[in-house]
Image 1 (cartoon, one colour):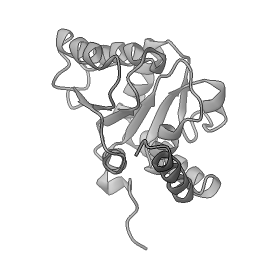
Image 2 (cartoon, one colour):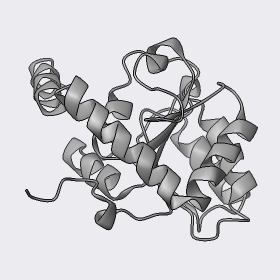
Image 3 (cartoon, helix red, strand yellow):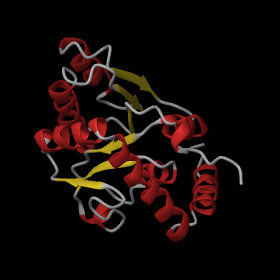
Image 4 (cartoon, one colour):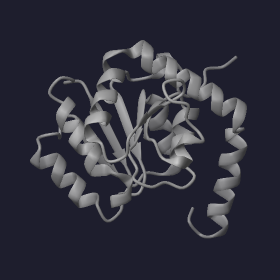
Length: 193
């Protein structure tokens, strides 16, 4: 059997990824505050933020003002195929949203074997079983987010176990590849490819 995207030997243990549209309801300021808290203790932390939107410049400015440039890379929009590559190398995915519909980025991160730290919103609770295949934190709580990030960064076996459980769940429950192909065709048909 060939190597799957996100297998443990491909992972960068301290890479954390966020993917989405940079808008207030994604909870980015809570994530940035959490990064500010833990970056002093985790010098090798590599936060990758993929996406554009109205808050893009605000996020970059926060990173600059708080001296996070070494640990936090605000990349901007990224082609879908390249996002999967980044998630495949990542160990941890964060989604600190204040509201969320169907969490497509979360499903993709889980399929890539990421330990996902996510807001405990109703739509996310339908996908994630806390401490088994993801980690739920209260929305708008940068302290809880920082604590769970620190737990995953300091205990690689814990984050690998959660990531492996997440990948297994998606493979068994969501038939993810078929889902991505259907979603891609919908985007193409409405001109958002």
